[in-house]
Length: 63
Picture 1: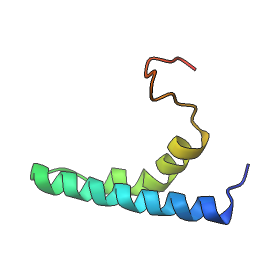
Picture 2: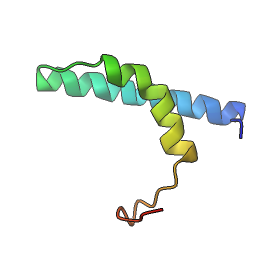
Picture 3: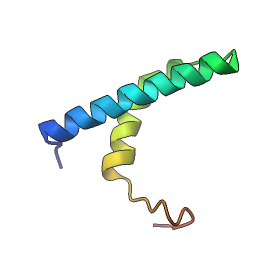
Picture 4: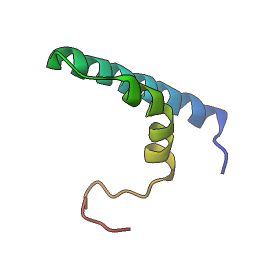
């Protein structure tokens, strides 16, 4: 199912925020390799926020 323009923009913004968090975390840790995290952030953001079925109140939920 395709994303609407509004969904696309919201997920793009979220991915940008997550990239910044990745940079901040690496900076404060004093080391790390950010290439992998940065390159897959768009894909993971869409999967996590749009397609994966998650229940944050029940993290052991198997579905």
